[in-house]
Length: 447
Ligand code: UD1
Ligand code: MG
Image 1 (cartoon, helix red, strand yellow):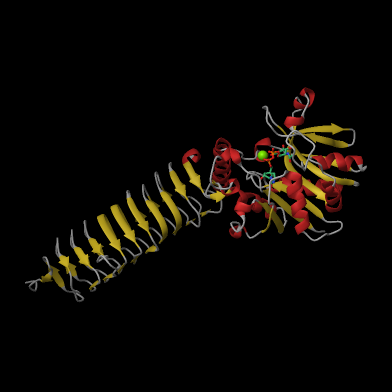
Image 2 (cartoon, protein in one colour; image 1 turned 90 degrees about the vertical axis):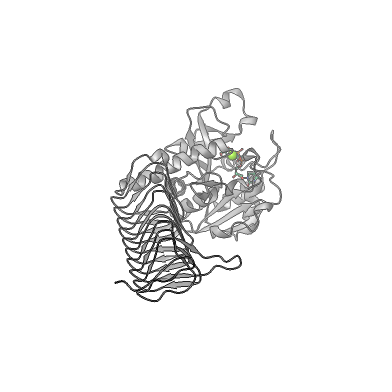
């Protein structure tokens, strides 16, 4: 049986007071729409059509879904009509309708809406409902003898209807034929002058078919996001879920309230995350790592037993047992081998450091290749930029770079070579060579 989904995302989102379309606002590092699409896919729905506003046109590429533009937001019912025109007719098919601003909806809710529609013979529609412990502007669900009779929007409701505490979550599973028929009958005869999708319910009931209510377990999961206060609340809920998942998988998170994790991370067992830590997109953390406090990682791939304290790591790969920080910055396609030690006030940019290299204090390594076990003294700077282009520095294995050396790139320091403290190295140093001074010159042989 064919199950397709229509995701409505063409509303104005005016309450966000933003130049950015609402569904592209981020929650834990991903756009709101991304979560809805993920849950639909997890519920086994592969074909997803997003109804987009004209300003979203061409901006949905990253989601891997089809989209259709609703030229004007004339209401949720009109949005579905636009979508149905773009979908080929499949008699006997099912269509799930959801809203693009509901990132907390779990796939189970979509599954149970579809299942309820199948189980209840003669039903044409399943509507997800929720009970909320506070007054809300959600549509009120009015039940009748055979199920849901209609849904009344707050602005159209009588005082008695307003008092109903069962609310329309905004998630529906339709029999496709019934949906097509009901949508074509919609009229904008209500307080907002809109085509309401919710009016399809009355139509279905009048045609003698049943509308099945499906109660959502936790009302918080079906809260849509309309303004930035709700965005912040949803972020907290989503972050709690993400942290809980990792904790159950064996990660210690000392304070989930101040640990900000992207939804798709992999983090190995017995890793400990200290407070005020953010781990962003594309990161992968091995086992037994120590991250934070006060660390920010994005696109960071860490092996096992890595320590990153009070530091920023982006676009970097860090080998087993390496340590970074406190107060270091590793970025721009940096690769640190196993056992590398990056100490305080060190920046490493677009550089490869082989195993057991030590850069313990106050240094800048940019566009450099450093061989294993080299020791980079405090205050060493690769002078990689000559005002026009970036140049490379190569340091051989077991080299010893004296404190406060300036390595003026392009330059190569050979294996096991040494630079004296405060050297300004402008010429290559051969393997085993020893230089010092400004500009650095060979030292007399050791006696
Ligand atoms: C809607 C429901 C209400 C439900 C609530 C749950 C209707 C008439 N009412 O109200 O019963 O309790 O959601 O959140 O459906 N959209 C379009 N095109 C349009 C209008 C809206 O794509 O022309 C999209 C919006 O981007 C949004 C969704 O549809 O994602 C819901 O629209 P919104 O205006 O927020 O409806 P509500 O008033 O919240
Ligand atoms: Mg809404």
